[in-house]
Image (cartoon, rainbow, N blue to C red):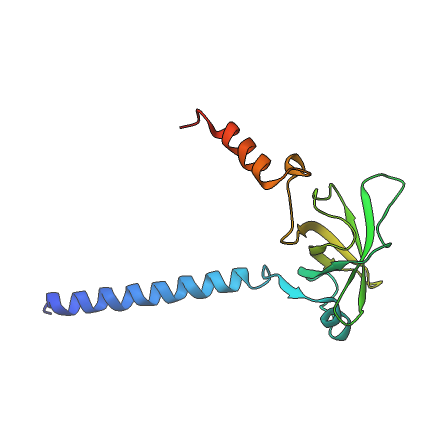
Length: 156
């Protein structure tokens, strides 16, 4: 028997490398298929709810007057509303972000419970374009610029 020519050896190695890469990609896609978080608006969640227990994200506005805190002091209950007036009740246990207030935008990561309540594991609060840090509230633009200049002197 004769040995393979170097040209054929390289071809076999290239084919094996391509097969290994495709296999690794398919394996990674299979492993991550249940980790994908789908994003729902309240109207979408009402029209076509995800499977109970499936990890998803719910985005909308925190309904004014809906935010309450349970007796344990860490469980928040509120409703997320959509553009069409649809409403999804949400329960979250934990520390809410500083920017989380009624009437603001929120993205809640979690799962839909059998009773239709969205149980959030994480809250991401969104602020509007008029956001001003607490330290700069009430200052004019000139005062804020001077304060920023004073805090950066000597950092270089």
